[in-house]
Every structure is written in C-alpha cells, then in structure tokens.
Length: 356
Image (cartoon, rainbow, N blue to C red; front, side, top):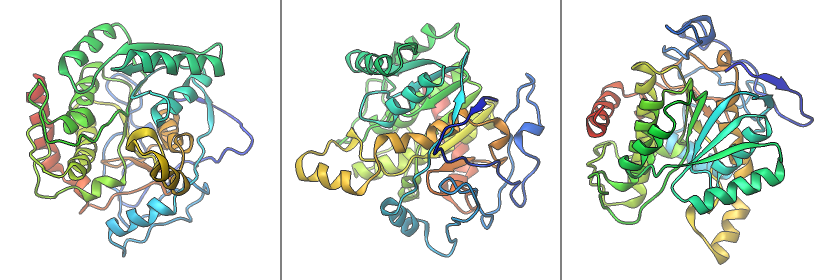
C-alpha cells in the first residue's frame, strides 16, 4: 500500500523508522516477484530504539533490563495514546474479521470506510454485522461496506467465505476476531476452540485469499504463553487464560510463516489493553475496566496504521510488531515469538489440519 496521507489536526504521526541495527534495506527497496513491495525478512537488534507511536520520536524506549512480563503489566496501566493519520484509501479493498460494535474491529472498519476504502465485514453473526453497517453508513453516508458471513471457528464457514471472495483481490486482511472460551473443548473440525478462533480460521483465510498486506491483531499478552505447551489445534491446556495467551503467540508465528512462505506485507499489532465488550463485564467490574483501560476507538488506532501505512515504513524484521505505546518494537532473538523452529512446526500442523 502506498496511500496518500491526508493532514488532520491533532493527529500524531509515526515517522519513517530508521533501519535498525543488523537489518537489511527497508522493505520498499526490494520487490516481490509480482513487482509489489514486500516486507521481506531480516533480524532486528533487541537494543535498537523503536520509533515511538506516542510522540513521533525515538524517546519511549522500553528498557531491556526489565523482564517482558513486568513491562507488559506496567504498560497495561500506563498505556500509549497513539492516533493514526488519515489517508486516502479510495479503491482499496479491506476485510476485517470481528467487526461488531463495541470492539476495535468495528472502529477499524469505521475508519477504513471514512477514508474511502471498500470494507468487507467478515463475521459469523449477520444481525451484529448489519448493525455495524448501519452505524458506519450513518456516520459516513457514502461508505462502501458489505457483509460476508464467516465464522473463523468453522473451516466449513471459512471455505464458504473464501469461495464468495474468490474474485476479490484484497489489499488488506485484518485478522482481528478472537475469543477466550471458558471450557477446554474442540469444535466440529476437531480443533481446540480458542486456538481455532484466534488462529486456524484466520490462517486459512490468509493462505487462500493472499492479501497484499496481512495485519494480525495480537498483543503483548503472548509473552505469558506456556513455553512447554503445544501451540496448535490439539492443545490441551487447562487454563482458559493460558489457552488465550498461547493462541496469541500462535498468531505471531503464523504471521511470520505466512510471509516466509510466499506472503507479501505483514504486521503484527499490539492494540493496547482495551475496555471493550470482549471481557463481558457488567456493573462495578465494567466501571473499573472503563476507568483503567483505553477505549476501543483508541485501541483501533495501531491496527489502522498497520493496515494503511506506506510499505517503506514497515521494518525489515522477521516479525514487524507495531505497539500502541512504543511504535515499531524490535523483538529480541530470545523472545518466544522469534522461535522459528516452533513457528515452522505450528505452520505445518495448521496447513495439514486445513488441507493446504
């Protein structure tokens, strides 16, 4: 993507990242086989200073001396306040999973539609998706937005969606939908349901639709994944929270492998810790959540930027990771998300499960 940046008063802009220590040339200086810029691969330095989303400078460097889990907990309270720039997306086709109102998927879809994109809402619940479309059109009467049924927890539904979109060339696929299921159970395909929703359905969508850019919404929570657990369709993790953490890690791995095995541009996003409908809190719990966490509009901003930034702004690292507080965040080689061997194993197992 090479959108035209439209100035907006008060918008905070992430400037073009430096070439981090140990990297090759930026992605835009290399061409894919089809002639379009690709994000490429390389290795970033864990000690490099990330571009700061919050200030547009390189000032908010997370210290490498603090364990990542401690940093994550700190950042859950003291979060970033990034605002994505407005760009011209006329003629671009962007699909978003999980677009129901109250979550960041809706706010991302709303922003894309406002910028002129042709937006596809991929959702399992038609009624909620139609409510989102009505709301988007009320805000922007000229919006181009449509619904395609897609339950990412069902390979049958995903295949049906892929067939319906067979003639569409997607510029961006935003893999956003997710769920934390209370019980350890397996769906009709035989896949553990949290992993299925977070990873398997999205993996099949990305592999078959092959968008120009793939954006995975994940987050820092992946660092709490069980390092010994199986990350795949047959995981048997007892804790619902750890199943979710592990599925979030799987998103990093599948993103990296998608690009390694033929994908073009790819970004993984930390949206922040959001006071959305996801946790299902009510009463006092909801009031406490809203007082501590950022809202879905602010949480959508990093994903909006990741989907619309010029390709030359994407760092040439194995896992380009855009953080709502730190901007482009270089992951250290010792990080779980950088474990190429386990990532490859997860990728192959998902391919086999999907019949790819």
